[in-house]
Image (cartoon, rainbow, N blue to C red; front, side, top):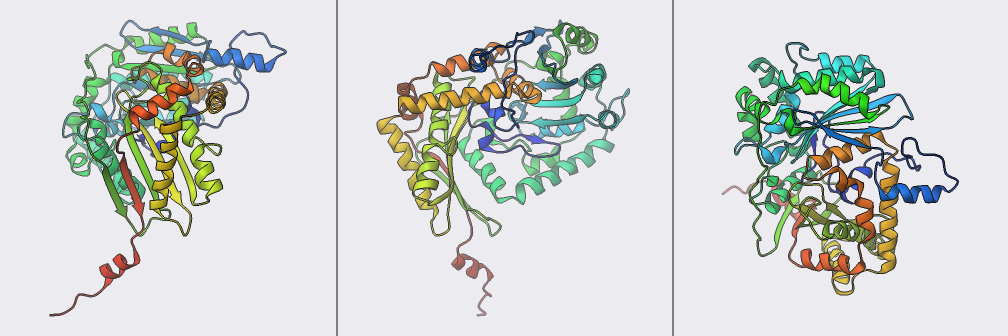
Length: 491
């Protein structure tokens, strides 16, 4: 799964989803080290015991229900401050696009801010700004989301605005064509002019040769240029329907009041389409190593990456996703990980070295490694470093102590995540739009505690024994630069 694309930025790359279902979003959030107590819970004299209890069930005070038109609603009360995070998630991303229309999901995300009859172009955003709130939107391969963070008294207005544009978006050539130019410029600025983004795009296209994950979220340039009002409206009419959406509200609210507001706003939006099952082409097994190298004089740090296709949280079974999360953490999840200690601290040949597990996809996930050399060392040494640490796990496995420490650290991060409204909303929204349930999220700590060292070694052997897809980001060699700039000989 690729990084998200939004109106204002691309979200971080692989390391953003390093630890799976919960910590995938936790690690990108500023955390305050204090677990959020369940609503109505009495203080305890034993904070460690309280954290342990809360770690067994994530967001225990959550409510979940469905409106008559099929829209799912999640409510997460948090009464520490009079603010709310309001998010609408659609179960559609770039992997759901019609063939030949890559980028239409992200393009429509832009166009959703162009207004309705009741609220013309710019009014929604202007209102949020005048109220002192925050807003944005983002698109990934599997979902598109819109959010606002405002004072609690403005929640009804946000819900009314969002429900209105769910069914009343107005598009004309006058707004579609200029916005298409904006997206093309975004692609030029954030992909075409960034060597690391160009390499990631090329790598993804050879990692997924048949599945739509191989196309960039922002779209291929030629296909973006062909997008128009008709393609955007067709996509909108098919997927932007309440039975294909999830509403997540976290903040100073109670479930009963949110349910009443949701019925008054979103509940009146007609169920106007049946998007159908999200069936995508399968990725066939391919033999042999796939390798791509990109040299660019703008590269400031050479890097190597290895990528493998593995089960995601949604597709994995028998504890394999949880074992992969622990494997990624032990191999490359920070300063105490094997790769960091070997490459950065002991051998001192790498400025960075790690591993990650991208688990939050509807279909396949990715397991990856990365390393960047220090001056005087090269990418060949980085590959040897990665292969050596992987070989150790394949042969000798991991220890009980490593599994215990990694599990404790990851669950602690999940507990601390409950201190952030936005993290909670993102965790549940992304899960419910990628084939998982509320229960899957809430019981994640329990599943993590059941993983054994034998399971960690087993998933490594099962999924990481073959050839990886290799990406090399380099600077041009001096002789290549000289050859490119040398004048042609006159015959």
